[in-house]
Amino acid sequence: MECRDKPQNGEGGGPGKRPRARGSSVTRTQSLTTAEVLRRFDGGPETGIFTDGSCQGNPGPGGWGAVYVRDGAIIEERHGDAPSTTNNRMELTAMINGLEMAPADLPVTVYSDSQLVVNTLTRWAKGWESRGWKRKEGEVKNLDLVQRAWALVQERPSVRIEWIKAHDGSRWNEYADALSTAHLRPEV
View 1: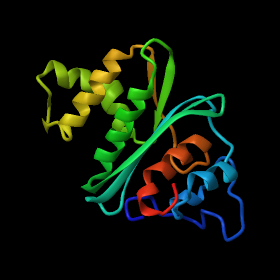
View 2: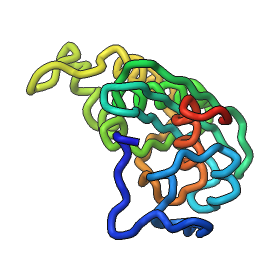
View 3: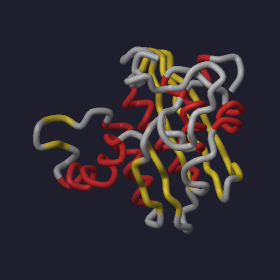
View 4: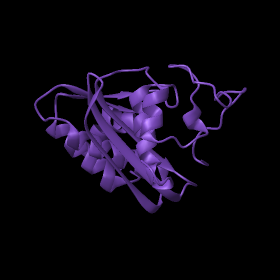
């Protein structure tokens, strides 16, 4: 896909090679189904909510996915798409859906491989809100989604938001990635 990082230095494995649990991932170059992800990957955290967004072109058609997992068992999953969007809008939409899955009264970590989304919700949104939703250097992009995500964070004080490396073999982050690209395949 155009908005995914392209493999470098021979990353991604060849035909018939199983990717390592950690390290380079074939999801950089292949659109895997969720079933294929579960067969290929076993690394990373086994509990949490994992979110991802994707876009073919930027802007272009995009998708998002979120999966809530506890001790390796899927509690809930969601995915969707938009015909004309941006990668950042899909990442934020995935985070919103992930936050909606989070129990309001239980501690849970919500993972995103978007540093922009993580920084928005853990570092910047509070200041933007205090300044009337303005940045020091201009407008807040995707303000509708940022405000919705920030409201959900405020409603769920036990939620922790963490960055997770993309395409690194983390089973549930790869699974969220597969959900985000489901609109491109006949099978989720």
